[in-house]
Image 1 (tube, helix red, strand yellow):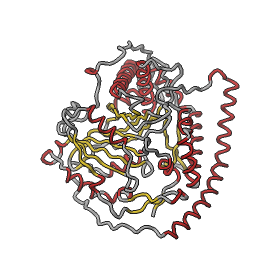
Image 2: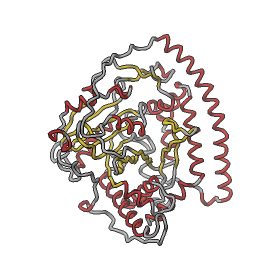
Image 3: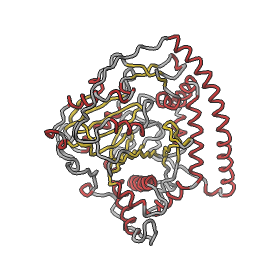
Image 4: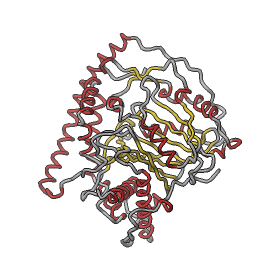
Length: 509
């Protein structure tokens, strides 16, 4: 019997009907590599059934304690039905990218059934009018609750869920499974009493440990205000810091070669792939808000989750936040990348991230009733919106995936992207996933906030084209050596749809 820890329970307690707390993974497969160039739905069901033992998430559901006096427990679902969780859909004709994006956004907006294992999978056919996809492609959209798994773990699990060659693994067979009975009530009562005492002490120690870090941060900020009062950090208000999140979602995405991103990275000494993604994000938001005549004077800021290393080992539950400026006020794309590289490489950025880590450590050990009550009050009083809105305008995540081709029943995986939950105060999420030499950027937002997702895709493509042009013109000497500044001629206000780039996939294998 496994119990939900405090860090993961946050995603459960913070969920509302309009802000469901699940993640999404989107896969597209080329059927031409499968035997007889066809993968049947029954074959996909068999593929999944043979791999249900990989993680307890697939057959376990949550059992919440009365009044949330303790964190929920994972228990076996004695009525588990695979065909409830895996569903078959098809796009109506013509089956283009926009129809596909609308379907995915609708599926992503629906909450999971909390009385069952917290995942669903949709097999989607009819992708017949998407030029950059091989003919006969099908998609699988999977959603799983954030309290069960985080984004990096979801990508790792997806790798185990696929074959590494077009030949299915013949050694895998469905394993017999007998659900364990529910735990006795008396055991739960004893565990609840012990956990609450233990968590109370641990929370106290976490708060004591966090005091020096928080004190140092406040002292440094005070000194900075005294020395440079005119350079006070400002997080501007934008449409993406909306007061309320509706239950309606939009989805879109772009994709490029990972080598192209690395070539851009090499144009600025010390820059990383994350820096390039931040620069591209800054350019895209600059173009989008310029079009709406809403571009603020001060730079927008992104909230970037980063992993922290403890004793040399990376722990999935140890997460911190960085809030680098996107330099949306900078017109030149290469200057924007240089400024972002400087910001993210400074010790101040890392120290702020460590400060956030101390606060997340507190949530891991906080008693469940206190946490559930506090998060519930914060959500209904919009305190969470005010807190998040004060530190950033959007969220940008970057999860590296496998760099080898993967297969589902012989069908080659050709496109991967991720979707994340929205929260009040932050209605724009960007998720980056790399796979097999490609890197995809997808975004999710409230439909009322971002009514034109196709234009946001155009803004990302324009940002990429201009930064790529600047980087290639500047990197003419040794790798990483800055030769000269290049001023890029500005394009029209909007990029025509006919010339807009689209995600490119590998040809038929």
